[in-house]
Image (tube, rainbow, N blue to C red):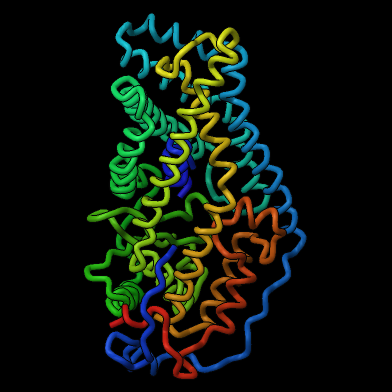
Length: 435
């Protein structure tokens, strides 16, 4: 998932980086929960307690906050140093000597920028991606595979940087007064294209994806997908055990590439009812169109962010032109400035964006609970994920506001314990979607 997040973060950084309640329906009504599913529902049981984090989990949580802060500072410091030292202008001059055509200059500059950014970030990335997970017993990855994956990431991110920079500066040259609007319009097909190719061409570069190894479990998942209204659902198992001891599952792709992916570590660590709940959660994202909503959200934020950059960047250039070494936004040496402004804007709206993400995740939990009607399996799944991933079940407000894209595990366990409308014959929020 890391590269998937990097793709999304790159697009969101360049462009600046909810759910609609479904009609409720009564249990047993057309489109409600099937009778055979209701018959399989777990009986009322004692609430699953939220485990207190042990010393190891607390240490992982606290060090993670410091690491997150260091990454944010590095993300802002890198373009700022290039601008303050005039290095961005010298990189542009070097790029112009390599290719005299303006578009060729943009391509060379983008490749240089991405390569230098990759090198500067390696020490922290190595600690974050290899040293720290091994120190906490979370990683199974060899040093050779880490370096191989890191090099592949460099190649992919460089191609993305070139495509995005070329598109951005083409918009600036062709639409000097409305380039922000043109760039926003271009972002939609760019996001959809990257989301489409990722599960098909990118993710398989790092791990092996294939059909589930347990055909019985696969049939139960496909049956659950059919009840959720997903026709021809595709479920893939990925061998993440070569990289990590943690567990996860996710929905990815768009259109024909859309699929649900389970890590083999999750299948190994969770019982069958718990796996089915996790699958129900991912199906909720699928059925509730959260991917489409995310694209719309990023596009709206992109328009706002790029409009602000178009207004602010010329003022900053006019104020510091002697130090910067360039005088126009159309000069590719301005790329670090544009990215810096976009990163600042992304950071400012981060709490709001994360709040929307948490709302979507909570609604996917609700969907899965109504689909499986097994709150105890849901709560136990969250407990196991907490312990396996060294998660803090009730982190502080700073973590929630600035880092948490999901409700806290404590909140999710509590919700799984108490949300049982089917037991009292109450309407289900998403019941109309079930078959």
